[in-house]
Length: 68
Image 1 (cartoon, helix red, strand yellow):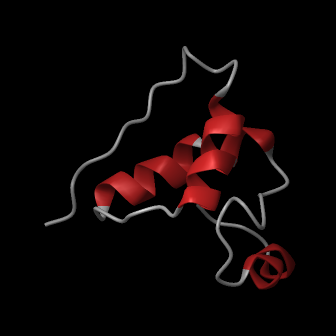
Image 2: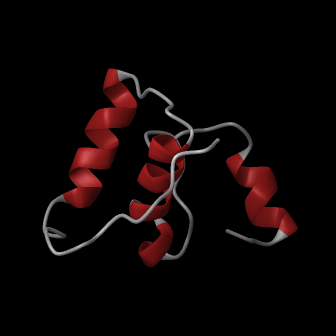
Image 3: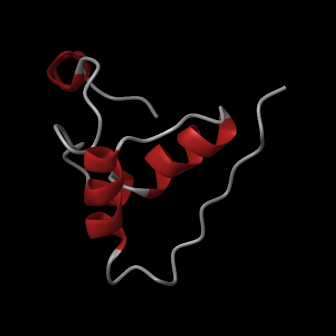
């Protein structure tokens, strides 16, 4: 997902437990889709942050394709 240079610099290499994009619509599903696509793992702190973001969003569908 494209963002401004300022937003990209503020994110650096932080995960959702340390940084979230300003747009609420991009805060959870896009991150989870990227993790699933690339078969990445999440540590406990990151998982807790994602679970907190997902609360109340049971109707959100995460679409992704596994990377080749």
